[in-house]
Every structure is written in C-alpha cells, then in structure tokens.
Length: 449
Ligand SMILES: [Zn+2]
Image 1 (cartoon, helix red, strand yellow):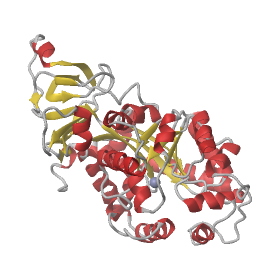
Image 2 (cartoon, rainbow, N blue to C red; image 1 turned 60 degrees about the vertical axis):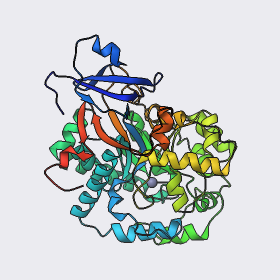
Image 3 (cartoon, protein in one colour; image 1 turned 120 degrees about the vertical axis):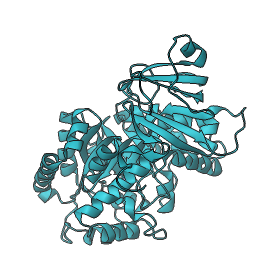
C-alpha cells in the first residue's frame, strides 16, 4: 500500500460511514491507527492532498464484526454435514480432541485467514485451546477470545475453576510475543467462555462471571441453542443426558440438582443472577416472550447464527422479536464445522432470506443488516466508541468490497453490499492492511491461503 505521505486516502464509488448517509464518490482518510476524515471526493480534492488508492466501483465500509466463532475448529469443515446437534458435537469432539498442538494451531490460523479475507476485522471467539488468539494476533485481527470452561458438578466447581485459572495463567505466560503485543496494544482481549447452561453448573458460571465482571470483560456463552437443551434444563432430555454421560470429565454419578426446576435456560440463568450486560449469548434460538424480556432487562447481547442453527437442525431464532425488543443482535458464523464458510456477510444474507421465507412480514432492510454487522455488533461488545463506524477519531478498521456480480448503478449501496455478490479486496485493522488484493499480508511469505 503506497503510504509515502504518512496517510492513506481511500476512495470508491460508495463509502458507508454507518453513522451517516452513504457518500457517493467518498474518501476515507487514515492517519496512523485512526480515521482522520470521511468526506466527498470534491471536499478531499480541496485539501490539496492526493488519493492513495482509488477502488473504482467498490464499497468502503467499517470492518465487519463476527460475534461468534470457534477458529480452533476451522479444519473441520464438512466433517459431518448430516447429523443432528448432539451426534454432531460427539463427532466433533472425537475428531478434534485428539489433535496435537500443531494441528490446533494450523486450524485456527486457517480460520483467521478466511475471516480476514471475508472483510471481517473483529471476531468474538470461544476457544477450547486459546489458539484462536494466537491466530488472530498473527493475522492482525482485532479479537475478543474466551477460553472455554466446562463443569456441571457443583461439588467440583471450585476445583474446576481453579484449574481454569491455571490454564489461563499458563496460556498468558506462554503466549508468543505477537499475542502479548496485540494484547498490550488493545487489539486482543482475553476472557472466559462458560460453554452452555448444560455443561456449566451455576456455581462455576458464577466464578467465571465474577472474574470477568471484576475486570470489565465480556462473558461468552451459548444459550438456548437446541430444543434438547431447553427440555433438559426444564425437566429432562434423554439424548442430552446420554451425551453428558459420555462427555470427558463428567461422571455418570453426577447430581445435577440445580436443574429440572421447570425453567427455560434463560430463566434458569436469571434465577442464579448470571445474566448481565457483559453477557454475549450465541444462538438464542428457543426463546419465549418472557426469555426475551429477561435478556432485555439484563442487557444481554445476542450473536445470531442462522446457518449453524439450520445445518444442525436447531430451529429458527426469533430475530425480529429480539430486535424489536431492543436487544443488541449481531451475527456470528459459528465454526467451520457447522457452516459453509466464515464470511459473516454471507451469514447476514442467509438470515435475511431465511426470515423473509418463514415470515413474509419480516421488515428489516439491507441497511439494518449492515448495521448489525458493524455498529450494533460493536455495541454488543462495548466497543462502539472504538469501532463499528467510519468516524474521525475511531480506529481505522476498514473493509473494501469489490462488486463481483451484476452492477446496476441505481442499486442502493446497502443492497449492493448485501445482495450484490461482493468480495473483500483490502482490509485494514488499526490502519494496517491485513489483507491486500485478497491476500493475507502476514501470510505472504508463509503458507498459501
Ligand atoms: Zn459456538
């Protein structure tokens, strides 16, 4: 990227600042890590500065935000496209948990590259190994990575929590300089990910929540993903019971006295005081009106993952109701093991088509989809003062999309981005190009992507 003048001035047919109307023939000027101005080409020309890159018929947007990933599992694409949810998880564990360190590392790196190449600049990742954080640092992504914790027995929750703290400490101590620098520079945040209400008992969840709250960190969770989960928490479910018995580190003698109280997963978590504005809940498929009220009251944010929900036969989330209730709802792709690709723009397109198909009254527009991919997702993780719009003073997280499909000049730019067959050409995080001409810059001399 030519940068002889210590600034970047990027121009294209469309600039979508998100905090204002689309700018036709717009310019985004970047100095250092920050956006310094967003204006029309005419306004820019009056400054006497020179354009550093003209993308022509392209769209410049804030970098997209993917609110739910598991980069660790990126090499498990297509491993089981047929099974329902719990058979699929068992197969996933059987495949991945025998991997060595190098395979986890490479898998996460492959996922990080694919994420960057899709025009995404920020991911929120639940990671079994922590390798997602290393991969994000290597590629230059901004990331919030939660180290997963599992444990359904109240009796052992203290010991399980201590062992998670040790795992976290060991991971941070052993992390490569690349990750340490990314954490110090504010690009990567490490936190905790209590897996689900059926794999984490209330006292263990409380340990995780208290630890995260004390540091102002998000808590990354899955809630109400499957009907089986809802039934198991409410009364019982044989399929889930069988799954738990076979799960490593869980004994068949376990006494799950905290469930079976006739509550939904959301009511269950609320009854223990485990929901808060720091909670980011992935999936949230099976929600009652009361669940949605409770989530709204606690200001829980939602990662909507319709392609994974569909592949794993888990149902269709009540997106419109959640949005109309005022919840912050962004999109998550979930992992390669349950979705066709890690492109969150494709997730949004699928979502809009799906919800229109099942509910002809679905009223959300392409503009609202792009907002959910940017500013609303930034709000969901408390980063809207830094990213999510092209606003002077914010971090220069930027994606440039070429329009590969049929180009109709009169098409509104939000529709063009969502439906127009677009692909990311250049991607910037904090003013640094992490993708140039569709290639991951950090990988240029390493592995082909
Ligand atoms: Zn997940």
